Image 1 (cartoon, rainbow, N blue to C red):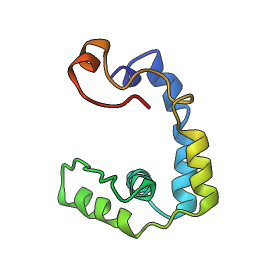
Image 2: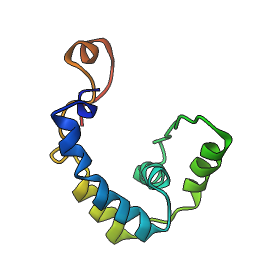
Image 3: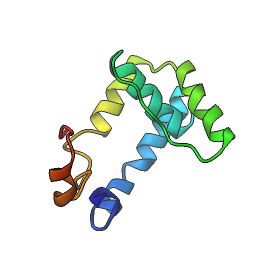
Image 4: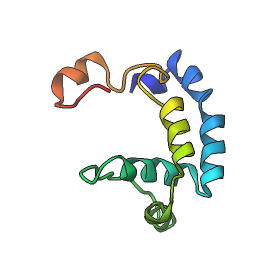
Length: 103
């Protein structure tokens, strides 16, 4: 995942502080905000989070109870979008092998 390698990673890491503040204002953890945001997008969007422990599973389930205020949602969309995140999701080779949309 190129966006998690330099030089992109350092640039994307700068978004983390603002994202953490949005999660705090929503009263949830960072992963819960990500999942709640996806759940808010549309009924046909079903996030499939990974987990390494039962505590993570419980945290992920808690995202279903997160209410995202319209202002927080607007700030999320402004903070994290195709123009603000640096680097591609997949390498050029991998992108040719998968069927996914670019955002």
